[in-house]
Amino acid sequence: MPLGAVGDWSVLIGPPPRPNGALCDHERVRRPLLALALACLLSGCASETTTVSEVGTPASPQEAAVEWVERTPAQGPALVFHVHRLAVTETGWRAELEIRNETSVAWELGTDPIAVARSFGIMLFATGELAEVEKRGADGDLPGLRSARRFDPRLPDRLDPRERWRGTVAADGALAADRYLRVVFGPLVARSDPPDGLPEQFVWITDHAYELRP
Image (cartoon, rainbow, N blue to C red; front, top):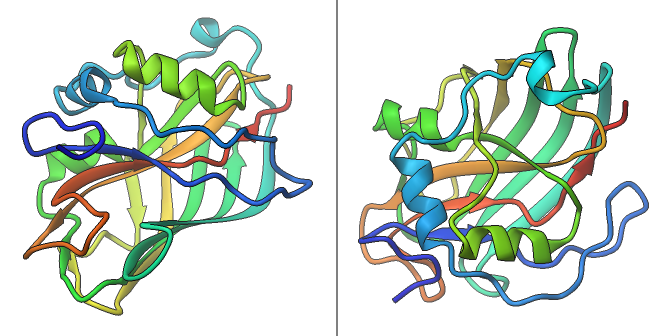
């Protein structure tokens, strides 16, 4: 059974990043089993747009070129997730993202609008440590998903081998200062047998995190 399996679904946490002065530090940890967390994500129990009063001190407008690159699996044919830029605006947030298909299999990406609306977005954590993601995932207690509401350009229905999608996702809603932002991609669904190391269907949560300033 793949990591985080719920029926045919999986959640994956990205591989440990290389040190970078703009990023928080992470420990090299084992990927968690996120069964309950994924069930919550796909059933729509994640939070929607959040108001300033619900987050306490809101993060101020800010922007960062983070250039996170994560691939799964780490070796061989892989899907590559790239976060180019993150921004907090006066009314919400946006992220410039890229997905590259470096496998020989086509992957469905935007064929289920409900699933996409519940999976593409961001999550805010109290720390930048993967241990927190591990524990909260194992407990079925991941933070509410801040779903992306706008995609520019629109997501393609699928990514064929060697294809990529790059665009900006965004949504309204305040974000809490002094929290650590991770980006959520998916769901991705293989059109045929995936390469070793990849489940047939999964949602990707970045291993990298960005600390939101007051």
